[in-house]
Image 1: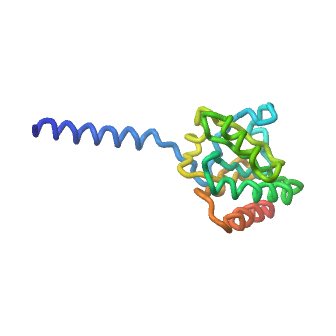
Image 2: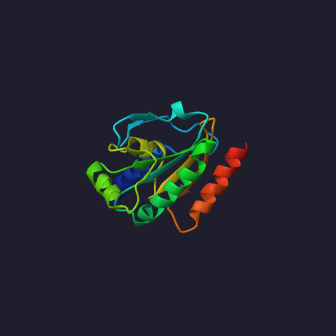
Length: 169
C-alpha cells in the first residue's frame, strides 16, 4: 500500500512537471506567435503580413455570454480606429465552427471585422487562452503589448487606452 502511494506521488510530480513544461504563454513585449487561419469569407489571413498595423485579436466562443456582449463593441472599435491602422480579428475557438456561424447569425449586428476559425485550438494554445473571451493587443512591430482575460462592462475603455497609446508611438 505504501509503495503505491509513493508511486502515486512520483506520478503526480512527473505529470505536474510535464504540464509546466508544455504550457506556452504569450509574454508581453515578445513577438506574437504568427499564424494563418481561414476567415468566414473564405480567405486566409496571416498575422505577420499585418506588420505596421495594430492588431486586436479576440478569442471567443458561441457559448460565451460576455462574448455576445463584446462583439458589437469590438465592431464599433473597428470602425472608429481602422483608418488609424488598427485591425480587429475575431478568432472562434470551437471545433465545430457551425456553432460559431450560428452565433454570428443571431447577433443583432453585422460584424465588419474578419472572423477566423481555430478549429484545432492550435492558435488558442499558442496564445495561452485560458478564459473566454481573451483579447490580445499586438503593436505595429508584432509584439504583444496587452492581454485581457475575460470581459466585463468597461473593458473596452482599457482596450481603447492601449490602442490610443500604441497609435501615438
